[in-house]
Length: 251
Image 1: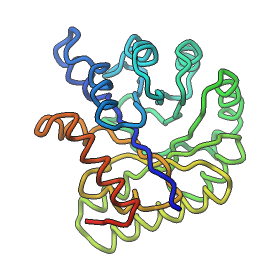
Image 2: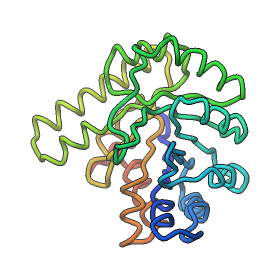
Image 3: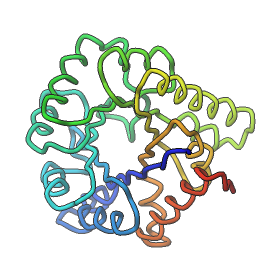
Image 4: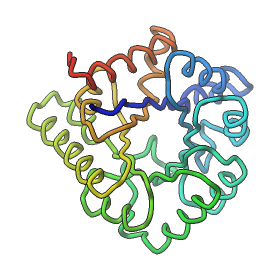
């Protein structure tokens, strides 16, 4: 029997809207509560170095006020390690971070940063935090993630999203197969496999149907669609599409 597929809702861009004007509205913690009531299985938030959306207090409130597991996305820096050690989220996803990027542009170079990341991950795990590494669907990076001791990877689906934007069947198939092969390979190494970045109502189902993937983390699209259909309905629709794909009902 195929394992259920979890949905982690990233609420970063509720904070982006709040910060555009300052103050406290809209409150990302309220968004997390609505997502939880609509069927989300976890909440994801990325505390960036420049605090462009999520703030330190948001992370603390999310841990204290939300019953769902909190996935703390962060760069591998001493500052973020300290904050994570204080917040003690359920999980931490280590992502590459470039101050000038609009959004995360690719996966970690785990192979090239092995000696730095290995003790960093050990320290995080010592706080009881489940660690995942955000990686491109590349065999070398996945092997490095396994060798470094991380129990989970999150496959970066940005290239798949980009191919879907072109509507070119060959490009879509190529990038989908890369994600599928990566998920199979990682699972074979004993890693728990997650995926995310650029997933939408239109492109999520093929990814959701990959049996080795057990969690999708989706934010920008869900929050964007919430402007038109409401946050609860946006979460429910994404969860329905994922569940249908898992049970073979593709649209």
